[in-house]
Image 1 (cartoon, rainbow, N blue to C red):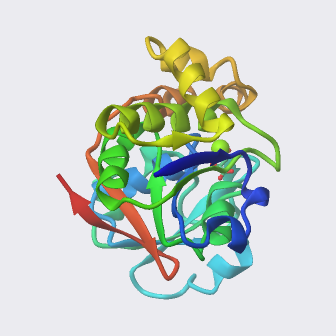
Image 2: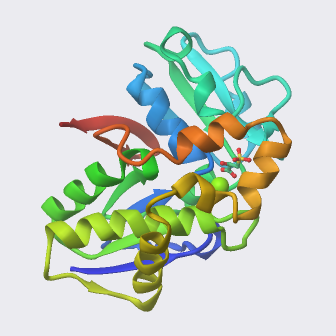
Length: 239
Ligand code: 3SL
Ligand code: MG
């Protein structure tokens, strides 16, 4: 099993993901939000690139529109992109159409993957278990921010890699994967503090979302692995 890492949603092309199991990571905050919504009984999540695509579902019964631009709720949407908004009261039994700047773009760009799954600190161990059981090459596809590398996604890739390497000894890692694991190991005792060394956590705190950063930094809070098939994210696997 060969494992590597990409840094941005924009880097992801059909040829990059074809034949590989791909984990999309947008730890702050889209993939953490997806995981939380599904934990709280959301039926499925439809990731879209643009708000206009989401708006087509505006008047459909049972759908909620969620997402952000500039970190804030999109006008006319029901929810923003804070995982803490996606409580059981709000999402149970509902379908959520989610549009975020980087995370849902990364998912849409990864549609040609062999298997496409959702990763974050929140479910790192479960993702590692899932990958170990699949076999095949793996790409940890960090969403990045605005086409640029972000520390939080790289750290989340590192924790998944570290856990995977504990389960399977025969994996080979690309150089980015080696670096991700090393950086995670350096910060494993305080992930939240490490997140604040990156600009996006600080931007979120400035917008009033420091509780999101604290929540998204929790490693292994949930043991589930959302899977995206035909641009529908659901929960097929629960331990
Ligand atoms: O870009 C994204 O997908 C978001 O996760 C960004 S934010 O954390 O909501 O600002
Ligand atoms: Mg992000």
